Amino acid sequence: MELAIAMDRLLQKGHAVTPQRRLVARALLAAPSPVSAQELAATLGASTGIGQMTVYRTLTLLAEIGVAYQLAAAEPDRHEARYVFCSSDHHHHLICRACHTVVEVASCAMAEVDQDVAQRTGFQGVAHHLDFVGLCPQCAASETREAH
Amino acid sequence: MELAIAMDRLLQKGHAVTPQRRLVARALLAAPSPVSAQELAATLGASTGIGQMTVYRTLTLLAEIGVAYQLAAAEPDRHEARYVFCSSDHHHHLICRACHTVVEVASCAMAEVDQDVAQRTGFQGVAHHLDFVGLCPQCAASETREAH
DNA sequence: ATCTGAAGTGATAATAGATACCAAAAGGCG
DNA sequence: CGCCTTTTGGTATCTATTATCACTTCAGAT
Ligand SMILES: [Mn+2]
Ligand SMILES: [Mn+2]
Ligand SMILES: [Zn+2]
Ligand SMILES: [Zn+2]
Image (cartoon, rainbow over all chains, first blue to last red; front, side, top):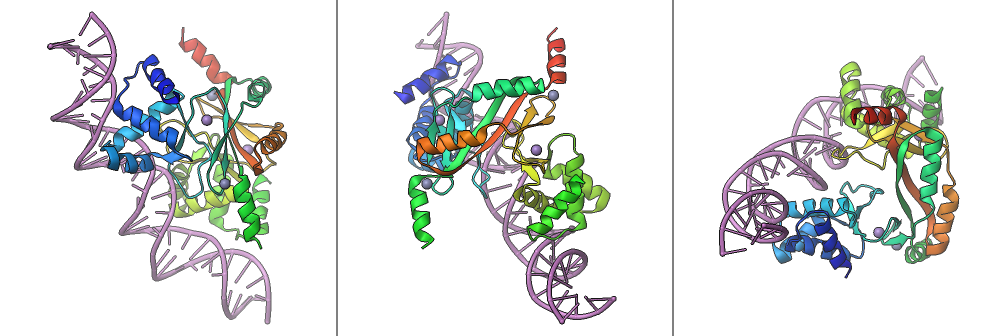
């Protein structure tokens, strides 16, 4: 149903619904942590023959229509863009520094902060790019353990 | 004096103060809008013979010690990292979508938001990556004008 | 000031994520 | 069912960034 909504949004915005796009969206939805285009292309390419160009284009497209989100906080030493499936309203993402699990953070009061920033600076149409990073409970536990 | 503080911070953190690092920091400080390693390397390389590897390494280093900031909100269709000089306390950046001017935003109440997110999710050591984007007054004006 | 080990530099080569291209295939709509 | 446009995907290519490594320079100790 999440997937159906995503495909609907494609149509609404004037894009075709193709098997490839469905496959990419489904793989993104199923991924337990953020994935890169290359990772998806490797997996999907092997199992379904989908081309890597299509994977790149589809991720970009899904991000444009708001069905995917390209993380702003890249992992250190990784220069590839990573995406998460993301169809609901404006919200943010909390990423574990260690295992890269992503948890959605219900919309915080950022709209008001945007307004405040706009007022103080005179800028118009202020919006934000925001990710949170931290250590998830499991990783925090194992890190404490390892520190003997 | 901004520059001197930056060089001091290098020493404090156990790094050498070299002419190259001074030059990179100075160029970054003088830049009116965010610059990439390549841009700095082109300019500085021509005028001073500094190598591009050094520019890359220095920008990374300056960011690590908190003297430079690598913007999270990359410009569309540009895949290069862009940096701004940035020596004062934790704060954020508001970037014009059109001319890429950067204005510093005095620390908003993000520390509390981090705490709130940590409490709600059980994550530890929560921090954030946050940039604001918008249209600066000048660009907003010219955009209105052009839309005749 | 001189010495010395560690850190920094930079020309070159290599990597790798992302795009450009374009002919073939498939989607949407009348 | 067609037509026209969009989409696909193999290949070639680009380009930002990193790896290498011989050489130089820095900073702290003598
Ligand atoms: Mn999400
Ligand atoms: Mn700053
Ligand atoms: Zn974790
Ligand atoms: Zn502007």
